[in-house]
Image (cartoon, rainbow, N blue to C red; front, side):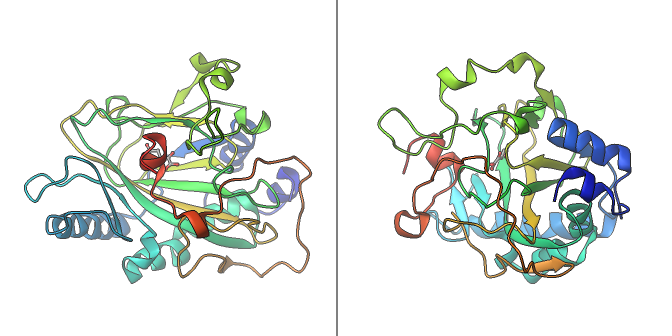
Length: 295
Ligand SMILES: O=C(O)CCC(=O)C(=O)O
């Protein structure tokens, strides 16, 4: 669906001005969208997984652990396939206000794709380099949107997501090095063609929802505070978008319709998209693994 067709449906949660801003810039940050009860539950679950990680020495299908992880000082970079980690994560993705926000941005028929919980720990200096999401999980059109939920306050010093306005209408870059190996990031030479000074930090209080179109260039700086930054990320698309390569981290709910009805006709956007590795053969660590070339 084109933005005009999506906006012809009355929004459920967002204002029309917020939807317009999303289609114009390729991103959005709105505070106070997540009810307090959900925010408490998500934080409770997140804390419990961090506690459990103390007994874990190596990464597994649930946890992506950083190099400094230890029982005393957990360093969980990512909780993978979040909706499979606890039924409440799936209830949140499919039954809460979040799926309604997705419908406001992709149209009334909404398909769930994937989810994860990213942590950014103090003192690790970890950054996420500039990238677009769609080259890792290409679809037949560019409706996919990542909705991020800030579980705690995220000020500028804590490494918020930062986005380049209008980049969703620009080139889709190759996320590989000169030898063709997957890096999960845009090459320096390509980043030199865009004006990085226009980047906007998506700061916000706990309960803020950020929305990023799948083509929007984004990154995040190191966390310079003393607090960990947990951000839960959920990807949705219009029902008429179909993934044409295996998902990097499929979940048991990938492809489920969470609002409206399944599509009977696929929407094919003619804009070419680079082909990612076949994750079903190669396996996928995480963006942190790829950007540090640990694959
Ligand atoms: O956690 C972050 O700061 C950025 C995450 C991100 O862009 C991603 O996982 O694709």
